[in-house]
Image (cartoon, rainbow, N blue to C red; front, side, top):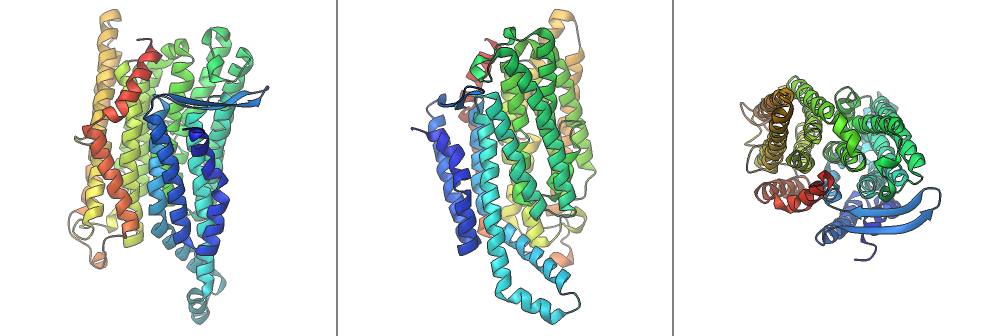
Length: 523
């Protein structure tokens, strides 16, 4: 299909103003369905092209930077599909959640400007002012939502270092405003934290890109050859790139921003930030380090492996200590990024394959759990697990989807999480056996064993969360609670079904991932 990737990337950005106008003029319902329809069309473009195998589009840009292009190959396909599938279903999910948020914020605004006058507050709330406020806010929200999705897709399809950096930064801008406008708690301070951390990481990443591009004489991916970069320079570039991407991944030591941002962000955006956006850091490590700088990667592999292990255990341990369900899920995301780093550091075909597949499983499972958190906020009015309990009977669809999401993150069959973790750890063990046979080193055996301990921690906090929310005695103040609207439950059912299907038929993605990884390893 001609210009398929160009359309999939730029239509959401070009039509974002249309979503804004529709929201203002026709309200959130029309804006929701316009955004959903647009993203569904773009998702269809991505999947239709992916079914044909590797596909590239190249366009003239500038002599200074090289070509502007998009590449859909075995590495990019799983990332691109998950990003747009999640964006599409979350566009529908957003409607009831964000209307609830807009009304809540409007009432706070009224209370602030009409304090002490109950009659004035009631009149303002019941007048058309609230409808106009909701319409305006929905227009801005869906315009930013489209720009955010576009930035993520453009990053994983880019074929040029400068193009990659531009899209990498585009992700940040709408994400900042989405948290600043509609977040919880001290949202402006938290959004500035998000801006600071991720922008500094991106600038460090840019230093690595400039070092490589100026050494090679081109920023195009096709021109990058490790042998053309001086040894001392290539090491500096690799360290800069890894640090920049580690900030995006929220790897241990660079994770500080993530629990605050995910805890404060509107839940549909948390369900994109955590499952889709932060994993793009892992994509960057695959594309920019393992593929383009393989000799440097071989020197760093064991350290990435250990770093991943530390991230797994730290994130899981912190998740066990949380009462706020969104902060629990945020620390869980830190832990899950550790799994990806653990696989990336395994230096094996199965380890690489499992790491990329873990992006798919984390995207599906964590989206389900953040969507569950959003339903708890709308229907129960709280994120505190201490105030919840016994909701399985009141919200059966939500409970079943949450259990599937939790089992996916914990790696329990028949969910996709089992296939991801099994492949990942098989690769880690394979490398441990080969290294031990060659050098007698048992370090990788130790990291493998501790990695299995991390999976027990993951299962523990997931089961603990399910027990506290959906089982036990129902508190009296929740006796009125009922299931959420179909706008919220139907997207969850789609994602829950998807994770089961991928768990039973993993070749949906393995058929694309494994040939690419074999090529990277020279197998």
